[in-house]
Length: 108
Image (cartoon, rainbow, N blue to C red; front, top):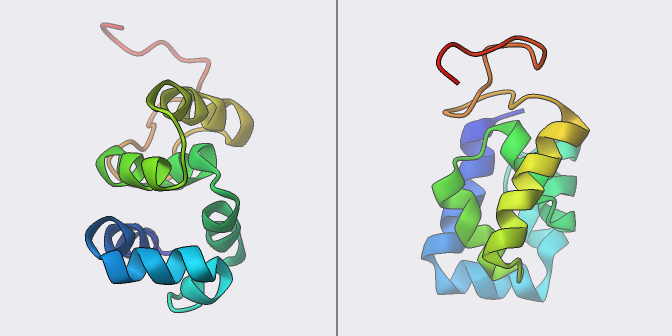
């Protein structure tokens, strides 16, 4: 897995109208322009916001992708929560969870 590559794909979609058009025309081909593993590619193709969050995609990048695929704001937030429930703690990146789900986090 490469969080950088996954984030780069999403960044391109956020910044480039041409990338958006290619993605919307043929998502599968677009994803093959990036060195993604099967889990990452599936998450993009299925629009699995929860899995993308758990894989470590930054929320600022992810929220634009969610809007691109038609996910409403409240649903976007819930899908991230559901992702942690379904797939486990965030694995990498800024939001990586450093405690087990059964541990109390100081001050929270």
